[in-house]
Length: 313
Image (cartoon, rainbow, N blue to C red; front, side, top):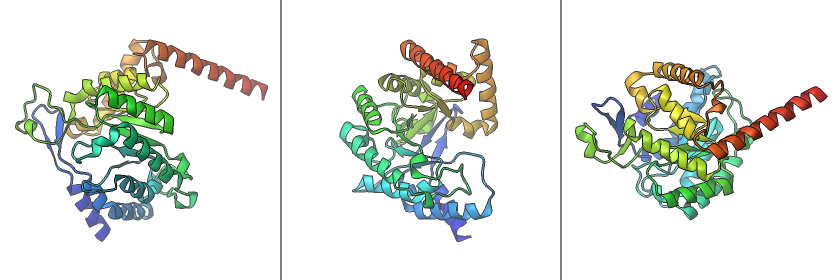
């Protein structure tokens, strides 16, 4: 019971306001909440393992530095060590607008240093530490994909620094994007002038453009989870065309609930059929003609190789 109470307390740290547009959220949540309750969250995951059957879903764990930390690298290392054994994938969040100094980690040397440390911490998760009762079943720390989550409103120079770092260091993917500090014109909420991260429809185009630029800078080699303003199949389609391999929904779930996922999938399938596309792979990165056709040719070549191997066997 104490563990459950502590986890409820953890969840109550999150503070946000919905907007009259019913399409965006202003979020004040600080990553301090994560650091202060990391042990309680780990205990809860252990408790859940003993009280549930193996789950079919995917558990991603988003990690950030403490608001008042003097050693941000140690914060991420501790988070990975304590929560990594429960994760299907890990996200190194360097873009929360509510944690002072966090976005400075998006520059070349800080991000290189941090990602190297994060990968070492991930690789140090031994098979004996893995918890398989509440997750998919990876049995080695090296099997846990590690993503980096970036802001939608970073400069071109920061994008180039991040792209160079993720390619050099071998990060498994990127989450694009987090919430934004910017306030586009046309917001109706009285809270629109307050501090916090803006999510939802107002940042949809900003997020999609960031995906498009990062896909180009990484030559389509780094998988991208597209986030930001997804509320329809068309929104998801635009994210995939820009270069996302997967799409995440956040704000619109608050307004429409889980049924939104089925609607987005249905609408996306309809758009694909109208355009003669049968697989998601046929959409990813289509906005980048040269990269798209090169990757498609590589995929076809690999499929032919696999077919030959099967025939030979």
